[in-house]
Amino acid sequence: MTGPDQNNGEDNGLDIRIRRVDRKDLDAVIAIDAQVTGNSKPDYWNDLFDRYATRRLNERFFVVAEPVNAGDGPSILGYLIGEIRTWEFGSEPCGWIFAFAVDPAARLQRIGERMFQNMSDEFRQAGVNTMRTMVLRHEPLPMGFFRSEGMVAGPYIQLEKDLND
Image (cartoon, rainbow, N blue to C red; front, side, top):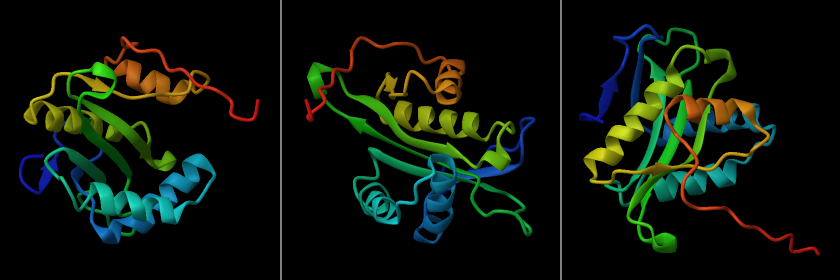
């Protein structure tokens, strides 16, 4: 972000501002997440706010997109959380996106793309050259979005074990 706000309304999408989250934004973030996932988890979001919006701000980024002229509409249109993780599994420091959503009623207005570009800029300014995320294979919307932003399979393979077996 350049200063406290970044106005990205000069392209063909909705006139929005991308800025760091504020505590007053949490209800809107929780509502968007609940709408997208079908599961309201306010305790989770309050914990994320405490960790990603108040500490180590040079390597943790919790941003929201808001309309420049909200009027009676929603105050927050989307959110994105990322952080710089260092040396996990032998990798060089890189940026990770791990929470991301746009209000379904506000999609197709380039909001996600502009938040993604904002996060890319934050990571570059912090000195990292690689950005990663994880998506479910059977979820075409996030997979298609991240691929459209130039993300491809990385050098790691996720492994898991069902602990009930």
